[in-house]
Image 1 (cartoon, helix red, strand yellow):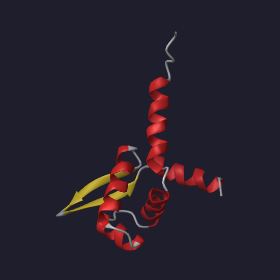
Image 2 (image 1 turned 180 degrees about the horizontal axis):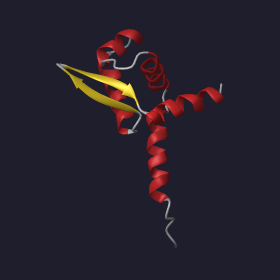
Image 3 (image 1 turned 90 degrees about the vertical axis):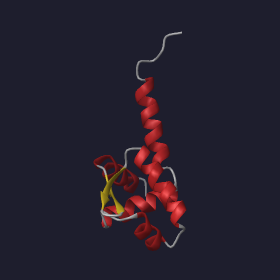
Image 4 (image 1 turned 30 degrees about the horizontal axis):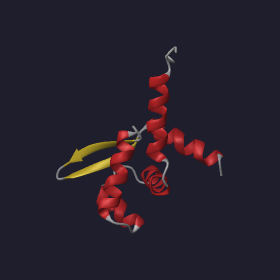
Length: 95
């Protein structure tokens, strides 16, 4: 059986899609689009959900390459990647 040369890229696409395949993660992407450089605590407050829940979602978004983290003093700030911006545009076409 011949191995598909694109298997790795398909797996990378799957990881990315799984990264945003959750309503809370899509909400987080929307919030970060409107307010870049937010901390997990600020995102949790904005959504009125648990800090640990937001931290897990942000971690998954970062693994998928959709959120970048930047340390600022004692907090970590988050912003969207270009890929995340493209995904939000794509999701709008599905509405």
